[in-house]
Length: 109
Ligand code: 2BA
Image 1: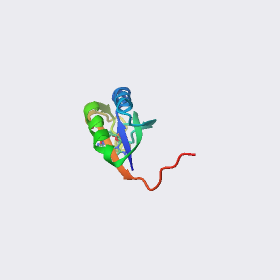
Image 2: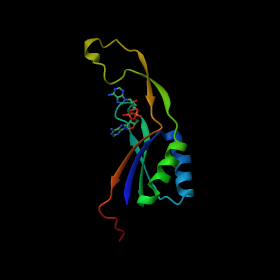
Image 3: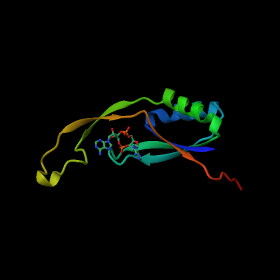
């Protein structure tokens, strides 16, 4: 069994949850916050049998779109040098950031 941890944009989370559920892939959905944009995103936990991992990844790929977001004052700029300084930058956000981990044990009580 694998644990798929999948971070997606909020805009895609409803459809993704629906499609995974339709495919009988169980999900847990968590509200999360990106460290860079400091805005909300959604993290899914999927416990998936090994032979269903590719199916789950395909559903994620097909239902999550990359988008460009414009932000003011990116956190990587040192504003102490000039507090009045600010400018917008475009950030390309992936459709999904996915980690696939081996599961040692899967237990339900
Ligand atoms: P955020 O941390 O809010 O990052 C949003 C987007 O900002 C990133 O998109 C990337 O394009 C950009 N970005 C992030 N850190 C940056 C930096 N130091 N300098 C310049 N640009 C930066 P994605 O890479 O597609 O990431 C989307 C979201 O997925 C992230 O939201 C974060 O919540 C999560 N994520 C991505 N990589 C991760 C990782 N290695 N570990 C944990 N979470 C990750």
